[in-house]
Length: 197
Image (cartoon, rainbow, N blue to C red; front, side, top):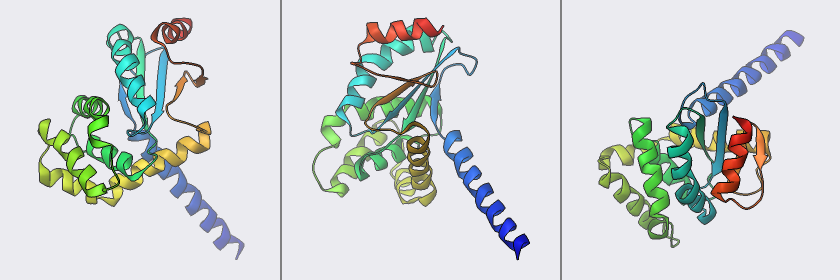
């Protein structure tokens, strides 16, 4: 009986480890894995503050640090609603990391267009329009939205983030495993990066 219990707990543990590895492996990242600084952003694609961070901070960060090999950037999915979850699924529907980040840019740039209303079917159509404009096929996007694996992976990321970082709001920004607090302004953010280089 003890042996059976031991086998059961070992199986559960291995299953949870597998979920963790899968969630971590699917995080969208940009930049050198050898960078001294890793910036993790936990965000929901329907969150206006997340869009503001991406539009006003990320582009400058990319130019000044990520493209120079000094910073590795990670986008961690933390959807707050079904619309954000579906948008994340479409972002991950792209075949390359560059295309995924291009989709991510557009989801944030056009957030006020698609992330409105209570009709999820209409929202899905608007999300897929962004995907179509970036050459994703309708069939591919529909297949992604119907995939339990895609949905589970994103929700697992959220669960793991909640466990590890105790996320209270989006965006939550973590620089080299220390949470960044305060108003997000690029000059202030830049100083944090420079301290860690």
